Amino acid sequence: MKKKKVVGLTGGIATGKTLVSGFFEDLGAIVVDADRIAREVVEKGNPVLKEIEKHFGREVLLPDGSLNRKRLREIIINSQEKRKLLNSIIHPAIIERENQLVSKISEGIVIVDAALLIESGSYKRFKEIILVYAPFDAQVERLMKRDGMSREDAIKFVKTQMDIEEKKKYATYTIDNSNGVEYTKKQVRKLYEIFQK
Figure (cartoon, rainbow, N blue to C red):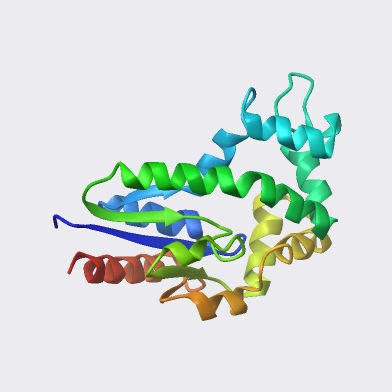
């Protein structure tokens, strides 16, 4: 395959997006990971972190001046307004970096993996979008198990994102990650073959 194909990949919290992008990578796709970029843009000394501090105060910083993710998460779980504010600070920097990374790739299948692809409006950049799906209850259970959250907090956290059923409307392809890893892997393989044509 000589030409470049760029596809957006999204999902909801704890639907298995990282698992799926890992499978794509194993098959030979190049993954541009928005979560990784999001961590980079808020590193110490970065203008994005200064902007977060300006709007959220010193309480969202650890004593060493780096971001206190736990504290910031508590704030945005409980306030839609603060969540929107945070996204308005972070998203432009993430999208700019994604675009830079994608433009450096000249051939192959490129998967841009971003949890808030639809919410941020950046889905409009892609002709095709893959949604990693798991039902709401599965998201809540996985979050409780993975992050040690209470059911109440897990429900709240899942609800900070657009409803997974609503996201289906934006998807070109849906990978159902609620029936075991092997079934998920099989769907990824099938899609990868489609992208290679």
